[in-house]
Length: 520
Ligand SMILES: Nc1ncnc2c1ncn2[C@@H]1O[C@H](COP(=O)(O)OP(=O)(O)OP(=O)(O)O)[C@@H](O)[C@H]1O
Image (cartoon, rainbow, N blue to C red; front, side, top):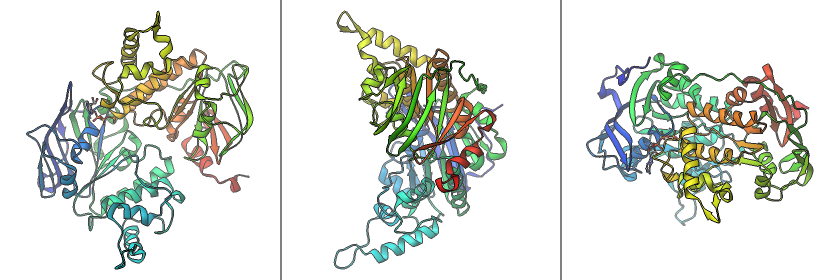
């Protein structure tokens, strides 16, 4: 059993590079952080875990100077001490705090050298032009220091996502001459990385730590934390539940720390539908990069889509949702030809789509939870010609309870919710439409371990009532635990279908990575 407020660390505070003392942060109606104490040593990878809304992002934002904390606390990094209510971006930079977020902010059409120069400026010749020679020299030394597997002139599009993350890290840390000072914060760096890329990145991070870099690592992926963390601090409702060494933690223990109780892993009900008539089928669909995609989904099924970024998995979902027009092939839904000319038409036919990028696709951050949930079904909330705010709020309140959304109420603005809680609202609002076909693209990105199972339970409840779901996710373990079968998509084609015991992470990784030449 985790012991409340026990710090397992035996280190002496003086050994620590980072010392956060009595840090609190209050928002109207919420105490996001409550007297947090945390230390991070030189060369340590310190994981920060906690459920959605537990305070992780708030802590990072204060460390980066985006927010100021409440008074009476302090943050020390090396010899720089900052009062908790006096943090600023400039002060954070001066103290050597550098954060790399999930959205890396790198440019795929630029070279490694150009991406690095964006963080530090271009060297100039005496005539004022860009001094490519010194730029390349500096880039080479960074490539060597951070062991990046690319040339200065390689376009970022040509390298894997783990290398892109390394470039973002090198860009953030290039101002430091070595790893003997400062703090690197990684905020969910692997959220959309497939397993093999995660492994590559983690082994690089271990090397950076071995060179003395202090790293604060935020992630919802427990396997990564077990693989990489020297110590783990868990937050719950803004308070530190405890800090533990790697030797003291296990997966179950982490879940207990995060959720506050043991989450039973629901056994997968491989209820491959007894109905043989597909609810949805696609035949020979082409829509770049999709080629000859043929598949069907039966009522009651949750079908997984595994594939690398760019494999066509998102395009397939968007084609079914009427967001992309196929140039060839045809689809059927509920026994009838289905060729939506718009997403509105698809929604009318009973198709719902939870997009990968919730912030860009149809989420209204400046609106309340209630408005966001009601938006796709607004027409159903008119009573005698008038919009019934009462009905909207009642439904939103029930969804907040059902999905365990951490919020002050249905009137809270979406922008005041933590990332994971925003995602729950997005899923809730599409389920509310009672879709017949549910398309989900990375539905649990940023969602904590407890709510993850919760979201799939609700999807399963919909499919038990005769709906069907098609789910794309980079986390193979997640696909395996929740899907009845998994289709592998590679270079725009469906190249394999796995069922039952064939569904293993190793097998999926193998098929996803095979090139079309070797698989012929
Ligand atoms: N600008 C804000 N205004 C009001 N409340 C806020 C604001 N930002 C965060 N909160 C609240 O503070 C709490 C902590 O949120 P935070 O984003 O730090 O959580 P988190 O642990 O990062 O969650 P997640 O895992 O979902 O990203 C939540 O209850 C959230 O609703």
